[in-house]
Length: 442
Ligand code: NAP
Image (tube, rainbow, N blue to C red; front, side, top):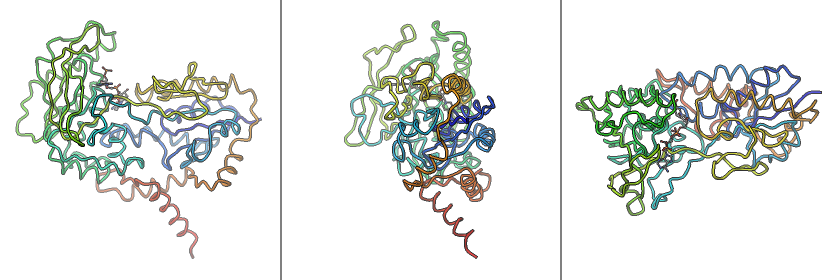
């Protein structure tokens, strides 16, 4: 009897889980269920639009999607179109690969003011994620503060610092490129609550900040005096050494006449957002480091700014039917197994850390657990899912239809750019339905 597996979420974690199941060469049907019409999760909607080489990993996912046992069901929203309990009744195993799409909130007084934007929203906006197309962030500000010392903070600061010409080979949305180009921003502050040696930037990404045509990195050499922290483990120590060397290079650079600056503020803990309805300044407390932790010193200053973008981590979505750890923002699980027949992989299991390839091990483990738990299977799976979606009038999108969306996006690309994304679900469906009408007419 065939095993039916549903994977909810078609980002890297979902695809690696499908691939792990394929490699076991079981008698198995695998259905990838995705909320958006488009696949690839963070590769499409999170990875920076100027990091196209990272996005090439989708070529491998494509092979998985087109393998015989696999089907793609895009535009199917778990929790709206069908419940997790229903899905579990249909499939022998359900793998949740739903990521961490929500911003971890900045819990300081004034955080509700206009002009405070979470990175999930901001990154989704410039990447054309349908949920955030209408964000319309107000970038009419001379100073923007980006909170956090991870790669997402770097991505955001870099995109704010790059010129239109530098973005020409990217797939940034036209509206975001225009808003960034038209912004009067001169200073982009990146605030880390810990010192430079504890920043989570990876070195390749940090170095990019020194190679922008019209934006200079600014580092105060005093912030580097503490050197490599003593509390770090070997791998983090090597990263800190490289990052400190890169930051030292930045401190020695002449910013010249560049019109934008990215200012690195270390030991800077945001304490309050000041202003009326809209942010006017960020109150920041100087910290000192104690055993790897940032301790407030009581010394504060106000950084006038017209927008604050928080890049301080993400949380997963809670889904009725799966226990959720509210503190960690992940599902409750035992090494990925939520219950026999229900598994978590990727960020909704581990939290928002690691690189794309980190998800592979999660997929391998989930596939192994499914084999241990599922027996010979026998649940109806795909056929019953299709019937249920038809009964409920859910217009799902299959992989060949996604390929038509992709072809239209590539055909619409500006010279040098890989694609011009369709950014609303309505436009994607209209394209498919126009094509269908076109095919049917004589
Ligand atoms: P991250 O690397 O965990 O960085 C989050 C930052 O937010 C840390 O500096 C953290 O400080 C800070 N933070 C958390 N809570 C805070 C608070 N209340 N106040 C002030 N600061 C706070 O997360 P991320 O940047 O969102 O990235 C997520 C993952 O995606 C990472 O693994 C990252 O490497 C990866 N990623 C990779 C790339 C790439 O390879 N190009 C691009 C984007 C993302 P502490 O360190 O003190 O906690």
